Image (cartoon, rainbow, N blue to C red):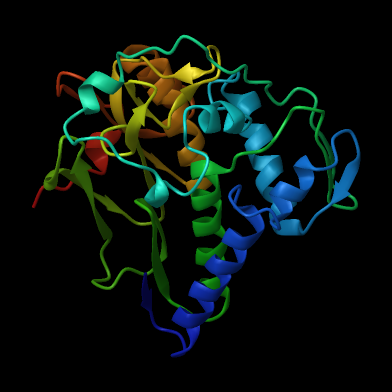
Length: 298
């Protein structure tokens, strides 16, 4: 995190706020608000405005991408072995990134989708049908960055950069007075920079399968589930980095573009008035329409 201006205690306040949001949204904590939602299928559950906003954005993303982005993939991801924080998973040997995208499981778990979710904005109530759970995943990081960035500016910061697990959110004045410069990592070599972007306001969000992977029942799997199959994505994309006005929307588009593949993914992002860069399994790089206006290689 980087703050420009403001009082000395703003950074601590921002970190505290991020911890608070994680406590409300973690699917790995039984006491979280999202976990509590899943304990009352069919009944409206009043939640905090933070959590209501998260669910509302997730459902909106599902609708906007015709289900390519789906926040109800949690059971399918857990069935693949991602049922605890990633740091606790037994990780397989390195170098399996390209193999993971071509491995398909025999027993996929059905993904229910968001059609039956009911939202009541008057009292911030959410009703989940039986068998539906919300897995915030990346959209939680993106929305947290949006919220905290706005709160820091409102509290007196002139500018803010927030990095939440590779999701970058910037707002306000950059330190050099020109632009926030953000590096996008090469998905095949974390020590190498793929490109840089110069951003005045917004988010850079990356979805990739080249490091978050593990062995499960004799095969290498990763965390990106295709809602249409309930199994790991087999698209030709291994990394999708999206530039968007807000982090939560960047997360929606990065997942949707990743699953759609290089060609359809590029069209999907362009139709959403965003841009970015896609990398395929052979190492090919595609800069999407509008990306050149953000590119900064110096």
